[in-house]
Amino acid sequence: MPEASEQSIITSEAKNSKYKIPIVHMYSGMSPEILTTLVENSNALVLIGPANGGIQDGLLPTVRQVVESGIPVIGLSDNEGAKHGVIRFSDQPQIDALAVGVTYLEKPNMYNTEEVVEAIKKNLDDGLVGQELSNKLKEEFSYKDGEQKPVSELDQGVFPPAKK
Image 1: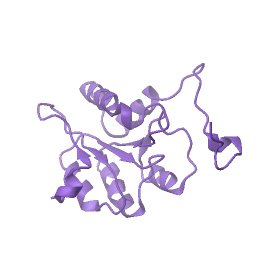
Image 2: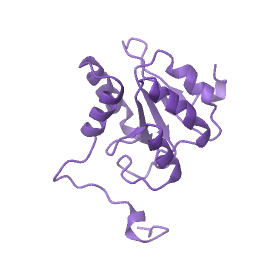
Image 3: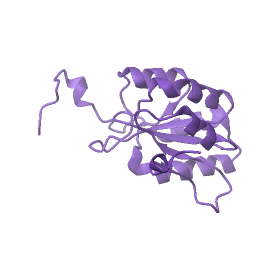
Image 4: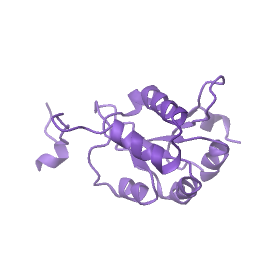
């Protein structure tokens, strides 16, 4: 079981929910055993990672096992300055997370966690599980034709980004 200090960064679904969807705010040095314990009998897992939602190397084997067991793993960014989710994949922790099966969402970030969890529940109610559920969420939370997708200041060729 996680230590008391570790519990403060973990939230989970309301007890009256028929689904178990742990929401984990990751931190440096986080133990893989925490994820293993939390995902037992889960329907999905939401990981909120630092900056652009990257996942530290030490958690990647566990995350891969979770995905391979059929539990969708949804990645969100904790970037407080951005009003959107992950729109750019350039950091190695993100690329590695994609490689083990994490599904990142473009529109939501940590401020939209409740909306993401409600979408997971709705899709579970509709019978979607595993990769089908991940694909549906990615579609639902992606920018559509005609919608303006945010552009990262890092894509502007200016680093560090200019202050506004």
